[in-house]
Length: 182
Image (cartoon, rainbow, N blue to C red; front, side, top):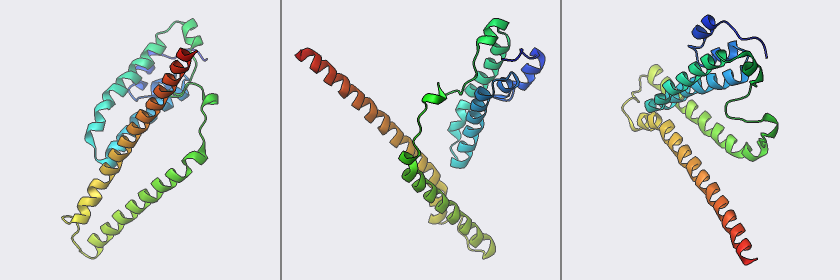
């Protein structure tokens, strides 16, 4: 790892989440924090869900104090630090099968593209031809559609996590049943 950087500049650069980590040479960690922070802003803006922004101060504080803490480590401790992504332990063991997600990704892309196309067509009809769609049912559906999709995705993820936990518990129960029979 490279030598530690100036504490003065690190303090100011750390005000942007992830930039302090990048300044110190931890590009993967900094990129993860930056994507998390600005990705959450984009997601909240696209879905019109303001309460998602409540986590921004937590992410900002974590990134800021992580950068300050890294810079205050001794040289030996600083040299032992390894750069890594925030949510992925080891990239070599991270198996991501594209074929498994091909059909769901295609469905999501088709729905998203259709939504964007319909939204733009309504915008053109309203502005060019003077047709008022702002107060109609179509506008209401278009306004709430992203929120609806987001909530369905959250529910599906929750059900998937429960299903995975239940399968793991069932496997553990079978292990103990077999052990008791012996």
